[in-house]
Image 1 (cartoon, rainbow, N blue to C red):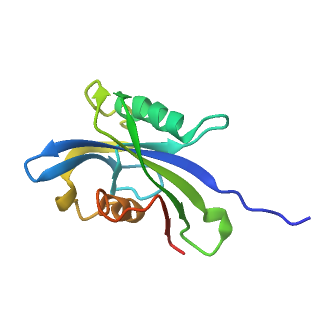
Image 2: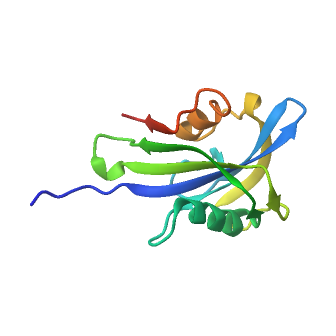
Length: 151
């Protein structure tokens, strides 16, 4: 019998609001996670759990990480990605945009998040998780429903 690798699913939520230079996105500054620390990333993201849809995971992560209840989630893309040739590193990520939420975004997990910030999509910070920058730079333009990164 052939061993099969597993894709690890995760959901990402980009809160978006209008700004003076176009849309702004809320990002978190990662810290002490062991992965991409000191990089900006989606304010809410995490693994999809067993018996949970990607939409449900996005809603749960937004509540757990930034203390908001998201409204309508707009599906952006599903990204299959890898960092290395080793298939254990393959992931499937589901990206969502949200323009309506209840509550004020705040840091709920200070051990993993050094800060929250609103950034114009046209003025992202230098250190953004690379595959997330790929998505953010294509919002509203050339983002396809299925993308790949790292292959």
